[in-house]
Image 1 (cartoon, helix red, strand yellow):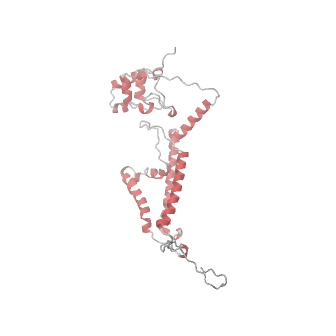
Image 2 (cartoon, one colour):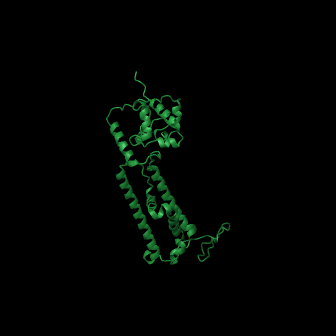
Image 3 (cartoon, one colour):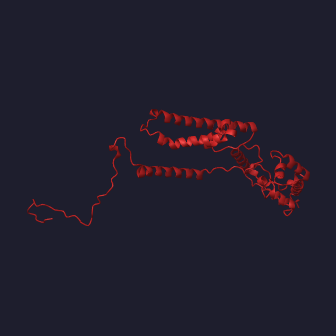
Length: 297
């Protein structure tokens, strides 16, 4: 730049730094509003936005599962004939669909493979079959009709399945596990709310742990409910077998195994299927009759 002060008409020249080069390949995202009917590129623009939304939703689900964990049911008992199996709510429509005669028994392949294959296959092929540019649903009658039909069918089947489940509970007098747990929790809260210290029951030890009957018990179906430690499951109203000899003698226990007791079904068929002979059942009953509380000093 010239430094003369007397000549104001002198041309001023700025010298740039030649070491800084201009990048001619700088990418400037286009303004898609200038192109009617066009949209932004799917990769990477649109895909990145969808991924961010999916990540936020996933974190939200994780927070919900941590705050409200799924309740675990009681241990499975194949001998419990009063249990009514029920899937999660989002599978109720398929559960109900498999109850109908044309999707079960002789047609179970139709209900388990063909019908779901048509539904999911239709969803997979929808973008390739419906290639129209129209986005308004009332101008896409075929796609919109199939969508509304699927939604109505799912709602109807879910409602029918849940209603039938409620009727089965009332007819059989079965209390669902989550309600039973709540009732037990309320009872325990009432018992513990008396203000005084609750006296813990004395622990009854296992008698004759080396007896052959103990080995038979470990192989018997009784373990699945009453536990290997004979403590039962109080929350599920399954009594402990420690001290059972104080309530029932050997003959009574044999009768319980053969005919059941209260809500417990008969166990003799299950034991026989497991390879137990009548002598084994007799030895098992004799060992259980020995399970008595120690005499008070």
